Image (tube, rainbow, N blue to C red; front, side, top):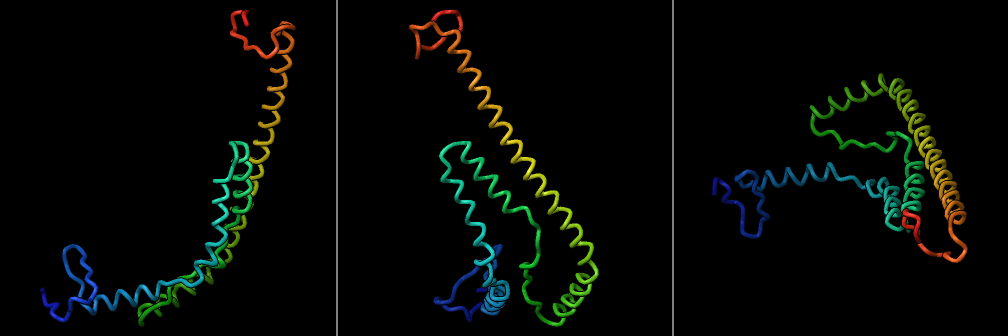
Length: 169
């Protein structure tokens, strides 16, 4: 068993690229998984569940209204809740110290760039929402004009009929 005699039948078996993980490798894998575990993830993801509201749209217009509302709520870039797994070992601690120094140097330029991007995102969503409102008004006006034209050319006795385009109803 490739030197894995310590693995019993009750032990989980993990095979990667044809090689069986040893109990030590499985323990290391479990430790890494624990380090990556993020108890705060459910809280951070709670705001994402509102996207499911799009399934409840009655028609295309309702879908667009709901989508624009979701976009409007998602224009901001922020890293306040960003979390990295804890550093492991001496190398990890040194890398974490370097990251902290680099982040302290880059925080100002980063925040300024995020502020500018947030402003662009918000203005884009506002422009898109305005465009949708304009197109809806334009569509309603065109439908009203079409109905008025249809009433004007419709002979008095054929209300409710369809026009074929060749002068016959």
